[in-house]
Length: 266
Image (cartoon, rainbow, N blue to C red; front, side):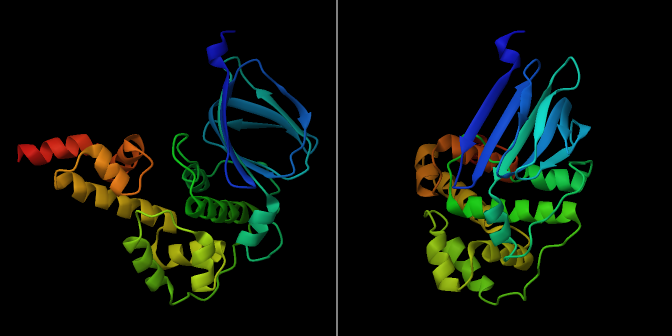
């Protein structure tokens, strides 16, 4: 089998949150255990694994969940092989994101639920995007919510904090800066996961997505004013021009270069 048919990308993120994407045909994982939750999506083919003493399979689009310290193996369930994306998250971070509540127990390791699949896909970063604390806190909060939904135990809903409007204004004003979650926790008297949950409840979007969109809007304005794409990317807080282009396209459906050309053609 050609080597190009089997590959693995892996990135250690913040402490207790790692990400991987892979494709396999012949390779099989022998029985092993993690001390983390492993939440993933089968992206193509059929993935087969033994878990809790039974044979399981996850088809393209299925979400799968493996609990900490539970034995499992893995391999392809068909000749075409399979692909998947997976996040490994420390149970302590899940517990913190749930405000100290008991860890969710997911009885069924494979879920065919489109809404949950969409929610989980949104957590995965682009491999080339830089790591930021605010994005990682949002990811853990989202993963905790996914696990709670799969376990049938909704996450706790604290009373909405009125300081969220002040936070929103601060994030908009400081969008180009690298934000310190420790400082936000101190200033607002909330832990980072409560901030993520409360902000989404108040405004329908995560803090990290809100910041990204404000950066895109700033870049859009700077490009319109005649700044080069590289200058606009740097001034708006993006890691580089490619990072800006990916987020610009996701927000507006076109690249900043095309946006600039359309403006000049008007």
